[in-house]
Amino acid sequence: STTTSQQSSSAQVEAAVTSYVQAAEEGDATTLCGLQVGTSAGASGGAAAQACASKAAITLTDLPGLSQLKVTDVKVSGDKATAQLLRIGQITLVKVDGSWKVSSFAPARSKRNGGAEAPSGADVGGTAAD
Image 1 (cartoon, rainbow, N blue to C red):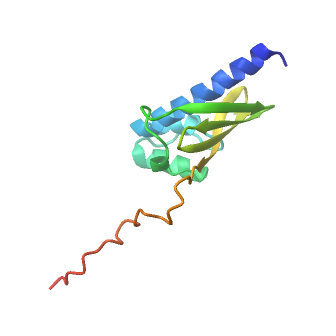
Image 2 (cartoon, one colour):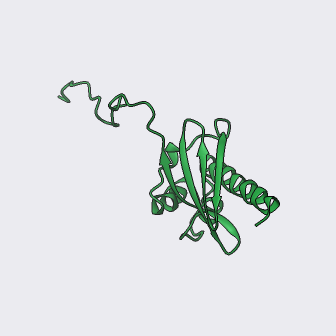
């Protein structure tokens, strides 16, 4: 493979990641499902988008917004690729019928502070209902 095709693969991967993040941000299930491995666009809306993402064990709220998205490093190896997202994590993609599809996302856990964020519902003030 020539440097040119390698270059265009990286560009295609970055474009797929950007489109995926944009679709996640907009709750565009049709686009999001279409950019992901093993899902087909069915229902629309934010819940449907998360349903698709869940098939790849992706939590959409873990993804950056478009304004925070910074793809720092793309590695392409045959029909597999990884894209590093600055301070966010790594997205893995596979090539399906000539198109790059998101297959998984590994959030970066750089802040090893033992979970400063309480799970929702954990911070119940202790006031009795009656």
